[in-house]
Length: 394
Image 1 (cartoon, rainbow, N blue to C red):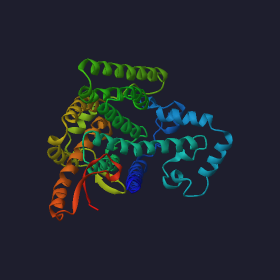
Image 2: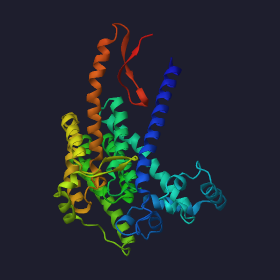
Image 3: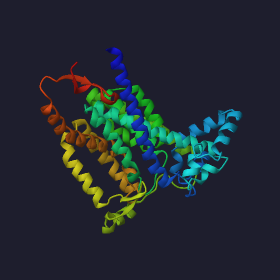
Image 4: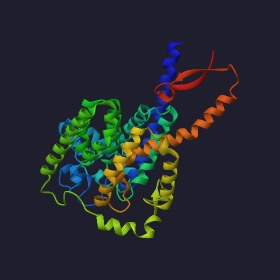
């Protein structure tokens, strides 16, 4: 029954989209309720980012502000008036930022309201799409459908806990671009990867360093010479974007980077640094390098590391070598968001652990199934790629 098969696949995709949308909404709310767009910090607020007057290095992250500014510039005045009237209406359904997040003061400034909402929804859309990109990475690395679907949800819901000392709108496109970059490298989609490098670096300049972690995936597809050539091109593109952005905002306050090495050493040698807590999702949770989080990370690593594909293990090791020194130099205390190059490794660790937990149940289910009542087929649960499964025979 071809039509029935198409309908089932459509229903699975619909369920996946709705589920990921709700998960992204919950995770984004967890972030925005905690940090907004840093409306209370002079020099790094969204209006200053939109105006190009923010302090360095924050002002370098110009992708979403540039898009919002351009859309605002070409928007017809009649449509702008309609949108502004709707956003300032006394209606909870039409003004969620102003109504639900009192700290988001800049959302009520008429000069920036429309662009504030644009950046808000572009950031949310980036997180929503990142769930699908992470799922694609898991499937490309031969993960089972169920684990590949669940692991991105775990990572997304954990993001507010990662945003410990600050959270910024460009963190969500960064996750999307890193996931897309890994998937493109696995699939050997070189031209798209080069285009992505330019866009991702405009969003956040450390993407230049993240390109180094793609080596194992590219090397699995191409010769050493071609792999090194691709890396050289990616680095050249990212470096060019970095230089141009830094030249554009060379006279802004602040510096090219913020150094916190000595502050970080003082933080890490203090025992109380590992016993900190904070509020996330309205409840108390462990913060940063709390011993609880460290224990969970160690447990997941011990259980899942050996089951990771070899190319992913190499990716993680390169990310550690590149990201940890950068974190110690330029991060601040337990600002886990600055370990973002490890997020795809975290995704796959979670994925392998979920697979481990599910496998015994799948075996048990097959043993208990009455003989002759099921036949092996290729399942497409939740709209994924074909994976072995069981369905009733007709």
